[in-house]
Image 1 (tube, rainbow, N blue to C red):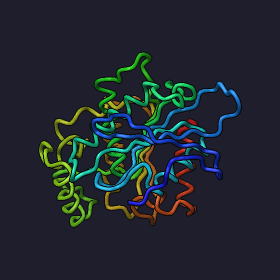
Image 2 (tube, rainbow, N blue to C red):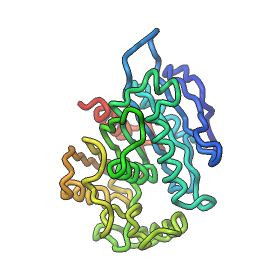
Image 3 (cartoon, rainbow, N blue to C red):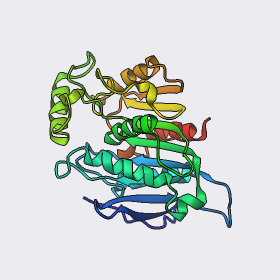
Image 4 (spheres, rainbow, N blue to C red):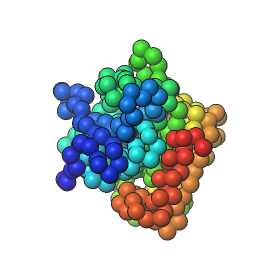
Amino acid sequence: METVPAGFDADTGVASEDVVIDVATGATVRLYLPPVQGAATTKLPIVVFFHGGYFIVGSAGEPMYHRYVNSLVARERVVAVSVDYRLAPEHPLLAAYDDSWAALKWAVSGADPWLSDHGDLGRVFLVGVSAGGNIVHNMAVSVGVSGLPAAEPPRIEGVILLHPSFSGEQKMEAEEGEFWRANNNRWAVIFPSATGGADDPRINPMAAGAPSLSKLVGQRLLVWTASLDPRAPRGPAYCEAVRASGWRGKVEWFETEGEGHGFFVLNPGSHKSGEVMDRVVAFLADL
């Protein structure tokens, strides 16, 4: 798999570095820091980012994800933690969830000087693409249920799910049958220990017995789908379920017409990709 090394990006002024957070599992994160003027004391929002790849491929150093996070950091001036997690089938779920939880706890502990010196633990955002969107949901529920161990409890302000990957034992009316069946077969490989198959709450947040979506951490939720993505129907359904749960935050759902899964990281220079980036930046800035 092609990767881009961490370092200094002369075009954006963004610096990045790779940090091992768990020697036993080999879990790492890639930190990003925007240009800092002199002894700047203003703390910056923290974005914890989870890449996509169906839990099977992908990494923080994969060119399209490195480019995306680097651009986001340059645009909105945030400190970012891009999480590398173990991949299936060599490491079936729950490995990716465990690594992501460890990385989130590490990020809000301020263990690295870039985070402790420049990051604002009062403004933490969780952002994920595809499988990463699934991870973000599960991390947001876990934090809402059990909290995060930290000397000063962080405030997770917002949650962003970009083309999230969910499924279920029952096909939704708007879902394509062939994709739905293939998707559930892939989930069986990725997550062989899932309880109830594709109705495991970590795969289907709307399944009977899943934790109440009212437990989601954060005050704002943004879900973005693409009309040509066969995963898309579960995005608005998820948003409606969050609203129906009594969650007190603000829920936003947007869909890009005429585009497929992950188009904004595959073709970041397109006009429609720019619209996605603009909306994510506005969400982080609370505009």
